Image (cartoon, rainbow, N blue to C red):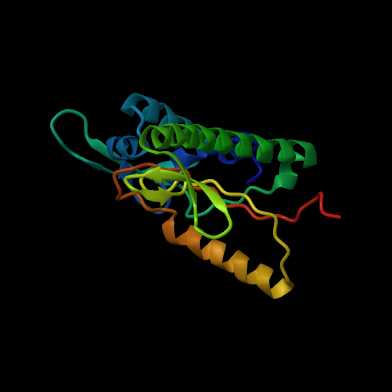
Length: 204
């Protein structure tokens, strides 16, 4: 993939999702618009843009009263955009832009879930009868974790010290979990999923 315009389109997660909806399958504009939660006119603009870039083609047309229904498919089954094609600085900028866009959606979703959780739960302070006093979130007569259970959201961070085999095992489990759920479009709710694992640059 050597066209700067095509590379920019694919490296931007906001625009890339439009092409992803047509990868490996022929679909109508109305079907994809409903899935992505956008208007048909907005999707029609993106379809025209992808066709100009050579990313999308018309698979078939089905006659009906009025205009025929067009079904579109991605022009290729897969795409590869080397970061080096844009230069190190621009490639880094593209990755950062992608992270920022995704992170913004995630944080806004977490904020909404946290507010919903706060309306349902309250503080529960108690002594376990032995040593410690505990402060838990309490909802419907039971302890719950914020951003979980009744509110379908989760955010967690951890510092880890792992051996080589443990790191490989964790990496494989996270990849398997991600692969198991990505690409599902049959449910009624829309969610943002983020998995991350990296060496700690601040570790001594």
